[in-house]
Image (cartoon, rainbow, N blue to C red):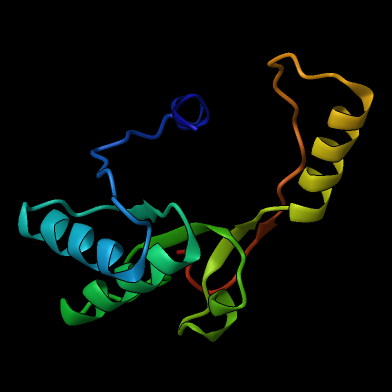
Length: 130
C-alpha cells in the first residue's frame, strides 16, 4: 500500500498499530491522533469495525467522514452500509480466497508464493470528493 501511495504522491503522516482491530481500538487511535495535532485528509482502517470507532471519534470532534476527510476500510462487512455516512470499503473476496487456498492444497502447491486476487473498491459516502 505504501508503494501505491508513493506513486500517487501521497504522504503517510503516521500509522498506529492496533491490538484487536475492533471499534475501541479505532476510537482510541483516532482520538490520540487528533490530540497529537494530526489533521489527516484520509484515514485508512484495517477493517470495518475499526472504522466504526474512527467514525465515533471523529463525530466527537465535530468532523464528518466524506465531508471533512475520507475514511476507507477493508472487508465490506454489512456494518459498512449501516454507518452514517455509509463506509467506503475494499471488499475482501472470501470465497475466491478460500477456493484458491483449497485448490493449492489439493494440488500440493505448498511453496510460499504470492497470489493476487481482485479486491473491488465499494465506494460509498465516506470518501471526500475533491
